[in-house]
Image (tube, rainbow, N blue to C red):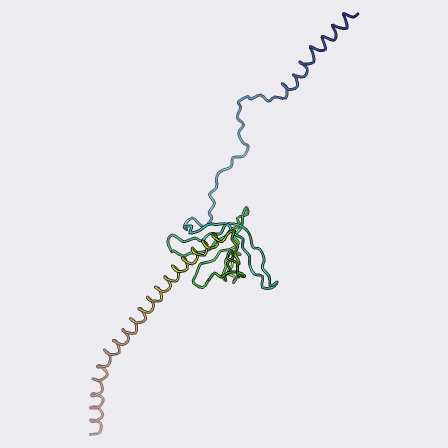
Length: 217
């Protein structure tokens, strides 16, 4: 009897490792090398951002606020990347800002000489300015406040912004000069035309006088 008990124990001891190994082998996935084609094939679609024909003058992270006139308070417009873009052909400059993740436009307006940057409440990290903004699909007079993460970033943004303003104001002055030159030329032509017409009028006067004298006779 003792020998049979020992034999049974030995059988159990020998069987235990093999049983524990079987589940692990069954759980392993076999690499068959088969390739499964997707049910739907997606094609790449080119998305136009509207910035393809523009050069980026500056691109940095900032937080934008707009002043709510009805509530007389500042409201956060979004956090994202603000860019100053110059059109390659027309050389017009605009400010564009999109929110992070959603990429929704929260600021989009032209940079002109009238949109002057001013410090907000004495902070050298924030700028305030008025602009006719088109981010909502229609032109609106907005009062914006933009805050940057550092003084250096805020100053860099202002430098690029004001440099773009000078370019735009220079173009405006050139247009004004051209308009003045055109006006002067038109005035000159009018004066010359009058001087040319004057002799003709003088020549007609004697004829009228002679006709009057003949009538009196």
